[in-house]
Amino acid sequence: MSQLAPATIEPMSAGAVTAELAEASVVGQRAQVQANLDRAKARLEAEGCANVSTLIVEGRPGQAIVEAAAE
Image 1 (cartoon, rainbow, N blue to C red):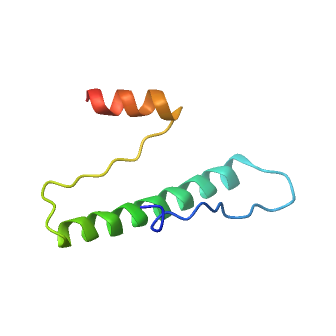
Image 2 (image 1 turned 60 degrees about the vertical axis):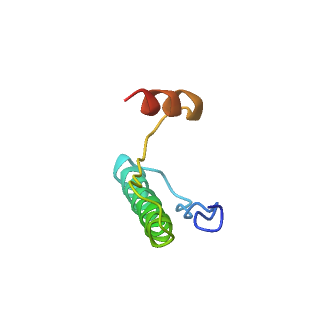
C-alpha cells in the first residue's frame, strides 16, 4: 500500500496563509487521497477481494480508527 500513497505534501506559498488557501489545499489533498484509495480498491478487487470499501477520516489517527471501526 505504501507504493500507492506517496508521503508528499503539496508546497504552500511563502506568503500569508488565508482560510481560502488552506481550504483549497485540504480539498486538493483529499482528492489525491481518494484517488489513491480508488486505485488500491480497484487493485484489490482485480485480485479477487470482495466487499472492499474505503473511508477517509480526519483527526488523531488512533482515535479516528477506533471511531471508524465502531461505525
